[in-house]
Length: 364
Image (cartoon, one colour):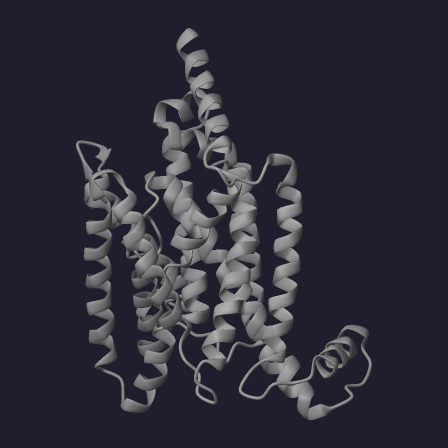
């Protein structure tokens, strides 16, 4: 009884310290204001994403087209309607959903392995999901017993994260020094297998697949929104429900158990959720790296370590971030379009190296 009380007190102390940590954290009473600001920022960048492209459109025309669809009125301009409603609007919404999903997946993985360097891309989960998706695209659903792209990506993503988790342990303990190395090794193995599959494709199929593997929301349609929206919403709610247990997990398995959490079940849930979020994102837009590394860190810098605050901030922040990056990818080399993954990797690698340098002794 005394031991359980001590564990609970340690956990409460850890949570309070996490909320106070750092000089620039948003106070608890201001988190709602921050979330409102992020929602407003998301609306602003979404509007910019619909307005800006290879051909810029006047904001007034954008509002008229969107308003006609929301009210059921006739479209004032069929040509602009095609560009705004059928091409750009679903693209912006998919980018927002994927940005939120990858950010939440990063939060789940970092809590699971208690390592701020964890990320679906760094740990090889994205590469594993890409392998499953490419196998189905190349050989059809029979390659995975009838599973579709999302299902196959989920299976290979889950297998990848399980492999990394197993390789990073010694004597039942997870070693930080092995985690990133195991992730890099599994990621390279999955990338090599993906390259082998690509060799079996003809050149016309290969070009489109290469562009997709680097990450792109080009060609997103309204039909792409249903599954990601449902999966990301359900997974985020599930993690929010487990927020206190995730906080305790950061303080150690004993602390989590002292709060009544089943640590093995919690770890399995985090594995499945992170894999499902990554697989869903990869199936829709391909491999986009480092979103799940950068955004959770920014969220914790703002609101502290409490996952009940980090998760909604990371979800909205990731949505804003990826919509903004997509705008850059569309406009940096007009009229050509560049893959989003080029920009997220260009930002993510220096950020990763900075985090690596800040850790004690530089160890991963």
